[in-house]
Image (tube, rainbow, N blue to C red):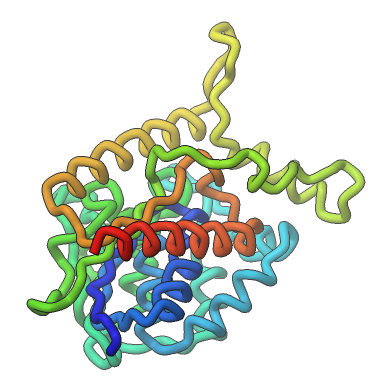
Length: 291
């Protein structure tokens, strides 16, 4: 008999690819996902899963190279964001066509932040990709997404782990995947840096120069605005996530280290998916020992 799961997927940028590995492992272990709620990349993976086309999206993600990621990055250099975000949404629609959320086979919701009113926006109806585009709008990286009179940015600003928005039945297990966790990890599992002789090294240099999250070790060095903003957001997201999980403890918590992969390491999707699968296997094994 399958165990029903109400699944909550956190924000986390490229680390959100780990959600794919987690979902695959849950299903292999006999769990049935009956509802899903997500923020940012959690909204992406959750929405695609709800369409029944996660395998198609996973194949696309695993194929991403630095060059492909760069081609999908439509730079804007405007005062409200570096990237427009139109190309990636268009590409995703080519892979998995848009659906209305209310027509999806299982209950799904995506969380964004209304930057004008300072409130959460919970998408439970309308275009899935509008909801996703609103939810993934990381401040300074993506331009805010406008729907009507609303301007939306990343849901992780207010609710990186949208536990209390999941549609959960009485016997459903509450499973949370947090890819912003402060947990130990093995250095050997981190893929090595791109060598200079690599065919896509020039794209790596471009990405690093624009989207580096590195904070200088030397106190005399200046911290770039982009790095400062993303480091600050990362600390905030981790703290909110921890407090939320403490307030709404799940039946099963699957944690992926925030320090293993960067927010913009989208070209490392293959390794990130595998890390999610490993984290899920370990968490499920611990859960089975205790229950």
